[in-house]
Amino acid sequence: MDQGITAFPVLGIDAVIFIVGNAKQAAHYYSSAFGMRLVAYSGPENGSAETASYVLESGRARFVFTSVIKATTDTGAFLARHVAEHGDGVLDLALEVPDARRAYAHAVERGATGLSAPREITDEHGTVVLASIAAYGQTRHSFVERGGYRGPYLPGFTAAAPIVEPRTEGAFRAIDHCVGNVELGAMNDWVDFYGKVMDFTTMKEFVGDDIATEYSALMSKVVADGTFAVKFPINEPAVGRKKSQIDEYLEFYGGPGVQHIALATDDIVAAVRAMRAAGVEFLDTPDSYYDTLGEWAGETHVGVGTLRELRILVDRDEDGYLLQIFTKPVQDRPTVFFELIERHGSMGFGKGNFKALFEAIEREQARRGNL
Image (cartoon, rainbow, N blue to C red; front, side, top):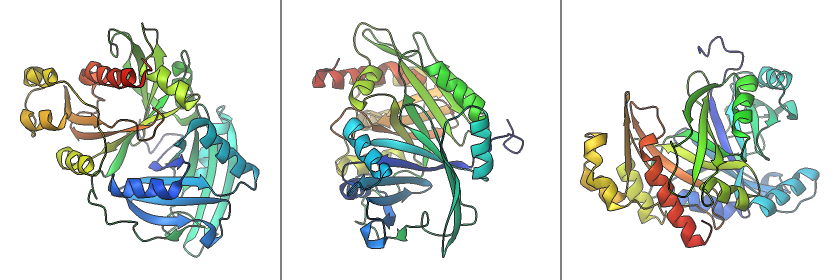
């Protein structure tokens, strides 16, 4: 679909907004381990008595970490409950749009639940228009219109100096896709939601034996805007002999939510080396995966020896190939994790790696006693 004629144009993911128990410590971790750079801050020092928020960027990727200092309003109480119920997690997949009022009106007219009607916020750097709607679980989508704004993030935020000079700076440059987990039987409803409310189309489908092992399985469909700037895979559990990774997530997160965020990199080898050295833990892959890799994945610009050393996965389709690797959960609850992905033509999601990935996750589940 041509974005110029779609009724719901989007420019990309504006920010992934996390609600966490300690935003200062989270900002330090993502600075030192993920190589992100602190660019803006909001807290008691500049008028936000209830919450503290740190804005980190890497290329076009932007994360916001917010924690409650003292809940004095309904909003603060909601955010405090969110952490208590879900642990550290994603509240908002904010979308940059050219016209937030139009986006909100279109979404609500098509059946979305409005959470915050369009409003303007202004400071000396200009004006931003914000609105938000509900998505799966307690996840939401804010619509951010910032074409006339030149500040570091939003009005109410001030520019901030880096927490540390990250050793891993530049490990990734953008958000490739964000994956949501929903309960059994809800996947198609949410696929329909994105189609109806945002004019997204179904880009990929993985059902049946596509993502299955001896013990567990899941189903997944990927929705995307017309230009593929925003891609949202939606997962649901499938019936299996044991508890799947989706079941485990839903249990420990306390319902549907964002499971993982894929980060686009131009040099996955350098990124993995630097992030490992900074303490990031990645899922392991058996040596047997690499013994026959060249037979079905073909040659890549990274040799099999390096792929084996770093446990990087490869997948190939008719358009090219991709390299990918997944972290372990980045908090004590086995919920949110990350993917690094380097694309060379392929617009896939690593279908050829699903079995190896799923088995690696099952090994971690078994170690936690949750399989």
